[in-house]
Amino acid sequence: MLDFSWLLDKPIAHRGFWGQGEGDQPFCAENSLTAYQRAVDKGYNIEIDVHLMADDDFAVFHDGTLKRVCGVDGKVADLSRSDLKNYHLSGTDDVIPTLREVLDLVDGKVGLLIEMKDFTNRNDCCRKLYDYLKDYKGKYAIQSFNITVGGGALGWWRKNTKDIPIGILSCRPLDVALPCWKKAIQPDFYAFDIKGLPVGYIQKQREKYGVKLLSWTIRTQEAYDKATKVVKVDNIIFDTYRLKD
Image (cartoon, rainbow, N blue to C red; front, top):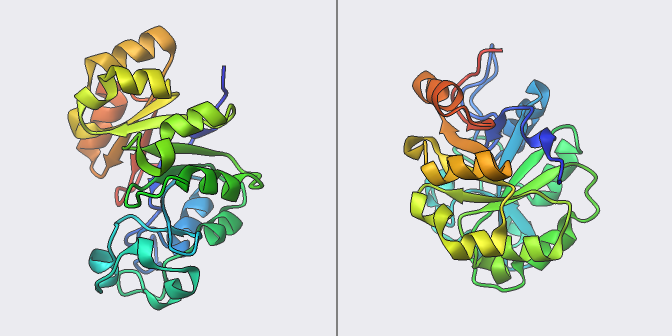
């Protein structure tokens, strides 16, 4: 059985440990190098979002477009590595990082939960991401909402790798129960919206097969209590909520 206990033993900081800093630390933006450094300093695992760009490099950014976070029009998939320095995150000094910059910063100190974004129809996305990550010495897992993105996404990772945890990311009970998902993916974990939990099918998979459950996105004490005391998930993915140490 695949051992990915590292993904379960530290809370997962969603897009890094972003928001208003602790003490005299100023605000830092989501998916910024500053937010990742703060997560590393706290010892949290980190959830990140990756996009394949036009030059075959990977950007770490959540949205498909630049408008919400950078305040300008444009698609991340149309950018190249040299463009990223031009786009500041939420009015801060941080700019959109490449995946290489994130990997160099984290350097195996904590685990990475990597979401493959589905804003590209290129069928070589999975292979390119695997090649990008193959020399990385740290721990990582792959998750996605979409089994068809990038040449098969989660199905590709299940078919072509043996030691990387694979998770179905969802907010709809029907998605996780579809036979095609179960057959193609055989997930090691589900990452499910806390608002939709509990889900009977997932609970049965946990009990029968030992599939793990992560919940997102924990932003309030109420959501934290539901995840940890009611559903009793295996780990949480949180942001802007400050955990009690």
